[in-house]
Image (cartoon, rainbow, N blue to C red; front, side):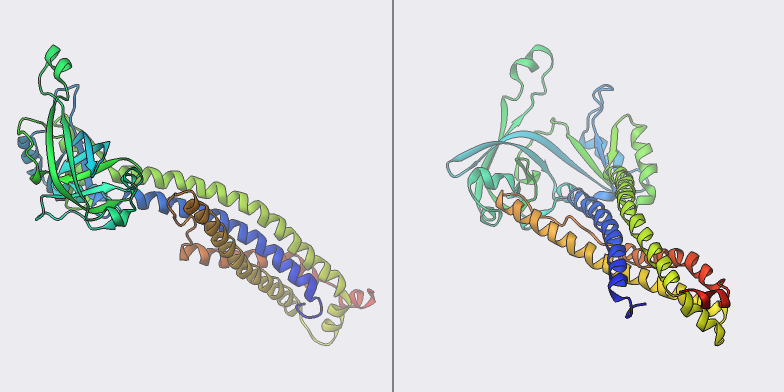
Length: 389
């Protein structure tokens, strides 16, 4: 089968390989996009962290006493507080409006930031600051060049007055930060910086914008969330977002896999046709084998082994085609991203279990497509087979 009819067998294997390669290409694209998205929004600590926000409708604000009260809930490991302010940053002679996240180093750790250069905030250095990579375009510097630069900024503090005075005087108060050193640059397209609150004099009467509640484990997150919700605060968690993203991509991968299966079905029909033609061409040969002692089982196994082996080879070819095409597309996309100043990423991911599934599925398809012709071949009457031409 593999030598006497090598051309037809090779084309059949290649056709199967295209089908399996299409499945691998599309599904690995789904997994790659999923990993790229989750890699930008998660860190190990962020997945067991709850974000607590004020409840404006109930008039519930976040104060130090509230943070201490939440810290006493069973299952809470730590509570970190932070502020969000509008700000204006200045580097040398260039200034830029931005958003500022001010908190303890623990609070900023739980933000789940991904660093493009430098290192994270040091709790022993109150003058350390992290900036987003977007500032590199504004200040005309690369991420590596931003590290070590000295900057200053002004925080616009919302007025705590009420009524007409609040509308008139809102955001007039400022908090100045001088001689802060950029220790790290995060991967973000938003003009945001993160600074240690210990290096700034923030009035005690300004309520926190958000609390980050670090739970001892993921098992207690639901109970902690319920306890905080009963205090009429808004609670959310990144783990919920991750769960929703995984659900969405599970559907995406199924849809992409179905598109690939259409190609595989066409390839499987071609393989079934090859085995059927082989049966017709080898009818006389089967008659000779039966007359010299071959049993029906021998003929059945011969055809099944041939088809299964072709399916296995088709799976191997599919792996090679799927991975190679994915890497080529990934290279082209990242080359274009670099040219236009974008960020490179891996668009394709190949879970080991899915690669194994492709091989097992190829063997199953080979066995299934060869089973019908194998049964017909084993049931041929030896004398009738010998008379065929």
